[in-house]
Picture 1 (cartoon, one colour):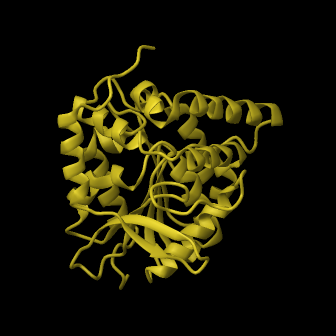
Picture 2: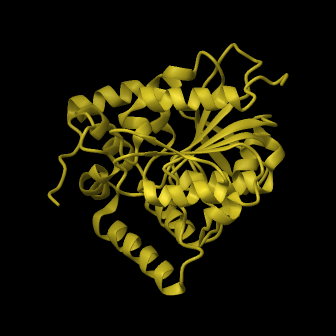
Length: 296
């Protein structure tokens, strides 16, 4: 596959201006870690907060279109996962989902969030599932967008091969090379140039050590087993043209969760970026159905 051009100077300036409206914040956790995140605050104190977890090649800034669409109706928070942005990495070199879920709990504790609607995209779905399984009372609803299932239930050979291939790619290309050569896989053929630039901008900012730890997490995780332990509300959504976690793979996750798969036409893996109106509506509807008011 030919390389995709890097983000242009004009595109870079436009993207920087977009994220500047939701500046990165930092909070120190009880575990002596730092967690960076972005927030869209709302005057509606009755609606439960909406917490957004990004995938392996992304970051908190990738959700700004959802901030724009939903920030007036409820509080939105998107983290930079451990090892991303200014967030401290987890301790383990080959972490499992519970390591990240523990940091998620500490972050929510630090912000005084007792209960939320939790959304996870791709690798973020693995972390969201582990948190929901361990702290079900804190999750009003679990929405998984193009969830990565993980390779924890596969043979050791498969896990090691998948892990080592991705680590070799990171070592060979680096973050900018990953963004230039791999970001196109995140989107469908219908994606706009703006969406393509946005995915590349986010992917180019991953930190190699954090990405490597997340690669181990992907190899070690088994999302389906965690979903079987969570008895709350779950929805699973995938783009019809997702080539990374295709509908057939997401159908298996939905079956494990005891729910029906929702397929979004003309959308790829990063559907919430390339089809923001459709995905924002899905997130909004799910949040409302999940008991989005504190009094409910």
